[in-house]
Amino acid sequence: MSSLLRIYLVRGLVAIAWSAGFAAVHTSLTATSVILLIAYPIIDVVASLLDVREDPGTPARKLQVFNTALSALAAAGLGLAAVGGIGAVLFVFGLWAIVSGVAQLTVAIRRRSPELGRQWPMLIAGALSVIAGFTYLLAAAGDDPNLTALIMYTAAGGAFFVIQAATLAWKQRRARVTQV
Figure 1 (cartoon, rainbow, N blue to C red):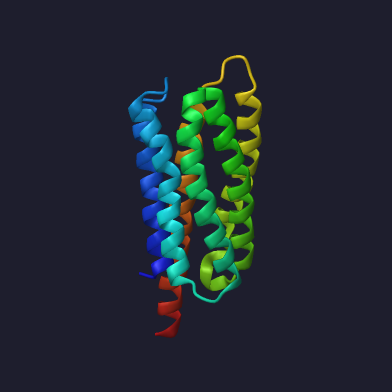
Figure 2 (cartoon, one colour):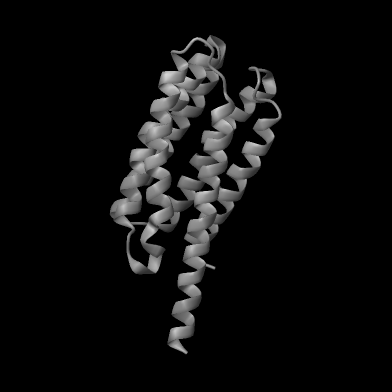
């Protein structure tokens, strides 16, 4: 199993598990929900650092380094925003979703080789992240902001990572069968 496949698979499964845990506590900003909100971008930091380590000297690497720093800032920003309430949390999460979505799109475009599965799930996930981010900004300014949308966003993002991992596994298996 390639390291990128492993990173995608674990990242996806952890995001899905996070969304299940967050679903149980998302109705208010308690210590548990804030810890989970801070933890989510840290999951991205760890995955990006692992990706950077496995991807030396490529154009996608610089964006992964940027995404690592961005996600670390998002974790800190979410912790601070929690003091301001759900609207502030949605605003910070929305900004992070937009910028990280653009970065994810760009990395996926740079990795569109046939060996890496053309990156369709990552392209779609990046575009949806940008769209979701804008909806969070709008919701943050609304009369009754809530965190429910983050559950679906993180579960869907996790699913796209798992699908990309499955695509990479299929491509690797197919390449081995072709060589035999």
